[in-house]
Amino acid sequence: MAWQDLGAAFALMLVLEGILPFLNPGRFRNMLRTLDEMDDALVRRIGLVSMLMGLGMLYLVRS
Image (cartoon, rainbow, N blue to C red):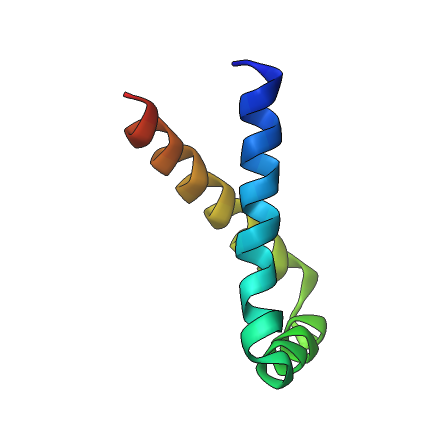
């Protein structure tokens, strides 16, 4: 993997992460409040599932 690919992936992640706060800042704040109230173990599980889904999608796209 070239450094350009990693940079492009990071840039795309920032674009996608910025869509919700740009389009609906109130809902984004509510989502952050809800996330703050969740148990750490649940947040970790959500993060793990998100990473595994991302790896699966990357595998499908790259194969």
